[in-house]
Every structure is written in structure tokens, then in C-alpha cells.
Image (cartoon, rainbow, N blue to C red; front, side, top):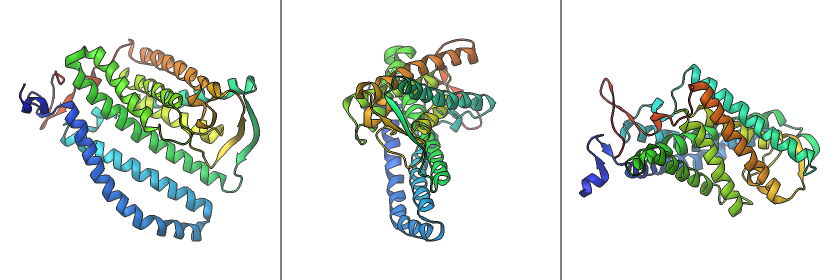
Length: 333
């Protein structure tokens, strides 16, 4: 295979999978430069005006929401641009085939995330590793701050899943399919995207090698919701309420990061290996156990929804955008 063949797939009329990912990074970097310039100029003035007009709680919350929204918007726009003009995909081919079924799956993901963190909390409470020390923190401006958390975790759930599962996992699976077969390609792509997910959290406060490994396992759980359904609905819902209930409801750190509002205030005294310590329960055996339960629950849900437990073909076989029609082609084989 010549250099052109290494970089370009003539059958699909687009770059090979590795180059597509590199080009996404380039697009995201260019957008990030423009976004950061605008943010640097406008954030100080925005915070000052909000603080004067609405108070410090509103100012802090809205600035945080705007900051996350800018990051999420930049990543999402980069994925959509790269998806359309590099990958030749439609939006729905990135796991966003939004219809009634998509919302049903998303509702399941939302309920699952809430249920798993509730399970973690109740087990820790029963064994005395977690103790409730208060409720509704802080009382001043709680509603505004909590609403801000909801907005932040929705944005994070959408853009991280779109990037890591919808784009990275899909492209990796397509690129590996010719070498490993569809099943092996999905396993390899799941491992790769989950490793990137873990490393992205490796520099968070209170992170350890064990917490990074645990986040990798969380990535596997989230990937299961995508590869078994072909849509991002389950992982987006699960990711959102996992974070929200972990921090905003039960008062734990979220991947090492503290939250400024929670329904419960807790003190964690159990062994770090079990509770995750200052990183949060997802870094402990309680969280890892919840991930195992969640993965099984996702598999059962997918089987109930589709009648079979299988890798969705949309993950490995692209349905590429054509002028006026769609044409299915082989993967990067």
C-alpha cells in the first residue's frame, strides 16, 4: 500500500480512521483558540455585571455554566464539522438518531445513573462508611447553584459521549475492523476510548493510578450503552445522572472535583479502597461494583429493546453521506 493508501480510503472517498481523528483534533484546536480569546475578553466583564445585578451566587453559577457550555460547544461543533466534512456522516450517524426510541433509552440511562449512585450511597451508609452530617448545602442560593449543576452535567454528558463514544470509538472500530473483525474491533475501540477517558481524568485533584483505572472501567460501562444500541442515548443519560447524583444529591466529590451545592452533606470515613476517598466513590470498589451492575443492566435493557444481545452494526459499518442518497460501504478494511 502506497502513502496515499495509508492515508486515504478510495472506496469510501475519505481519510483513513487515524487521520480522521487527527483532523478532528486540529479542528477542535482551531475552534478552541478562537473561543478562548473571546472568553478571556468577556468573562471578567460578565462576572462583574452578574455579581452587581444578581448577586454572587448567580454570578458564580452562570459563569461556571457558560465556561462549560463554551467547552462543550467547541467540542460538539468540532465533532459535527469533522463528522460532516471529514467523515462524511450525518448527525444521526454519530449516535444522535433522536426519535421516540432515543428518548426512551435516554430515560433508562438517566434512571440507571440515579439508581447506581443511590445504591453506592445506601451500601456505604449501611456499613457505616458514610455518615450524613447535614442537608441542603449551601442554604443561600441553593436553587440557583443546583440548577447550574444540572446544566453543567447535562452539557458534560452530551459532549464527552459525543466525542469519546460517538466519534472516537466509532472511528477506531471502523479502522480496526479489517485487522480484528467486527467483534475484535469493537473490543479494541472500547478499550482505546475508555483509556482516553481515564487519562483525561488523571490530572484531576486527588487522582491516583487506581482512580484512573476506575474511570477507564466507567468508560467501558458507558461504551456498552453505545455499542449495544448504536445510539448515545443510554450513555448520555447515565453519564449525566451519575455525576449529578454523585455530587449534587449525595455530596460526594465528582472525579476529584468538589461541587458547590448538594442536597446532602456527607462525611466519608471508610477505607479509601472501598469508598474512593477524596476522589469520589467511582474510584473505590463501591463505585466499580456499581459499574459492573450498570453494565449488566445495560445489556439486559439492550436485549429487551432489540430482542437480541449484539453489537449494533452502525458502530463498525458507516452509512456515509452522499449527494441526495445514502450508500452503505465496507469499513476501513
